[in-house]
Length: 261
Picture 1: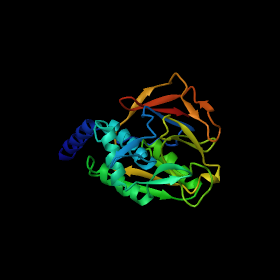
Picture 2: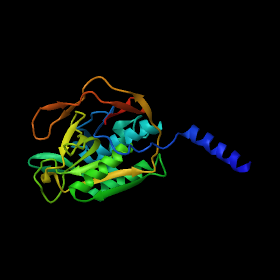
Picture 3: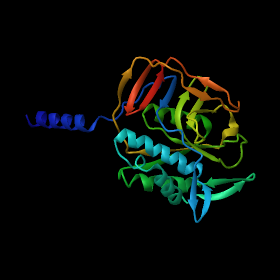
């Protein structure tokens, strides 16, 4: 009798707080996250100067916005500009000149420290995990995380020069397992950019994500009308439509996960 009562109380508690998201196992062939802002590039005022916020703080702010929506909190949503200032400071982002253009540089270890420190002001259980590995392993882990409702930030070589150091942070918001591409929200003012993991020049690559951030989701619709457009890598202004999603999961107000099985 006591066991039965305890089980009922546990189920009532889980119904109130929401079940963790079920993993999509196996992951669908394609997946795309809709509903995030297309921010950037952003600028800050510091000591009377206008400086670039940098892609690190920009990607972190977008990730935290996502979790704000999922968890019903307001770490970033109430003051996106103020959050960017705090992330820029907490990550120790510095302004450098690269090929004649000012850019914000954030070292990977400082990115992880700054993201975790800021996230834990709202979610004490939050921890940053990271993976630095060959392209195949990073791609597989990114697919697994996103299919579990946990989008990671990707650090990669935006210029595709295969240099020693990657130079751009962007939130992963989709993938295509057939073509072995991730889709990122690049922080350049449009929502979707493909990144081919068949091209070694994007390396070295690294992932960062938050653990301890479970939130429920639900089936939204059997199919979704419209065709989100993904900007093709290294093809200028060419956009590829992703049409006729088979189904969608509702992750929170305005957030949809489109799935192609």
